[in-house]
Length: 381
Image (cartoon, rainbow, N blue to C red):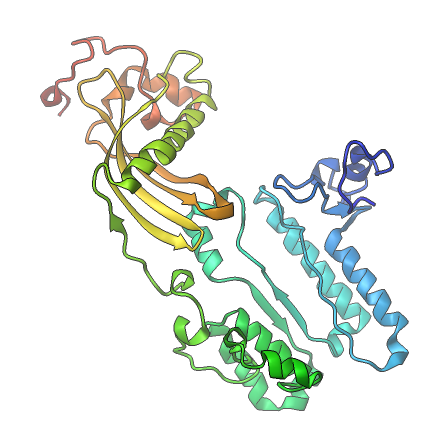
């Protein structure tokens, strides 16, 4: 029942603390190593009794296979792995170890001798990494692992073995996954003839099996990969004029989020509440450009000013993104100081450094000892 939603009103569910206490994968693990997902993952936990959700599903599948081994009928299983729906990147090592253990389980059971294993990702990460360059690459290169048993390779001949090896370096898409599975199952036209007559000409099924050699210089267009999701492409940014619709939208909805991020970074070290740094307030955008990251995400690059009593303004450069449709939200990727001088931090540099804060986000509350808030650029040089 732990895999069912854990609603407070349902008293029959296993208590959360008991689930976590039984979740250790190794003797070194503690109850803290088993945590509910930080995203909206139906309130489910990723493990129970020292086993991951994935390993329990695989065990169940192996039991069904064993129960029907005398039927002499090919079997197919599809399992959806939720184990990595977490924010903490340090869990990746635990995830990798768990998947390695699952493959060892499959090998020990003898499944890998006559069963093709296809391991694919359904989408990119949905956490804070979403608007980083690393995530963009990950999104455009989804994971696809194919384990083909020696028995299948021997039946198909040396060409299939060489094709699989060469195709590791070729662009592929979800259509190719479909075509490869179809190829392994028997090819086009098998089974329900009426289904093939109705769906056989669907352009979205027009992939290529990776069990056959694909051109090394295959393009995204050849593979059916949309331009926005092509890792080889580069979208040219669009410059936006002051007071244009994108400019005003970023001023209202994106820039305040960026400045809030800067204030949060300062307050992590209590630099605002302790009176060392002033709370930052957005003043104006200087330049703005945008480019589509995916169909659901737009990236913005901007230079902007922060309000300050000093004669020289605080100027920053930022890269952020804003989701559309169900992915609404602002994701801050990069923020750094872009003006020539960062004199606003001179009066409290020591306090900020000792606290471990970001020097260039801090506009010191304490005024400079000479000249008030006015700053002599010649003297600074």
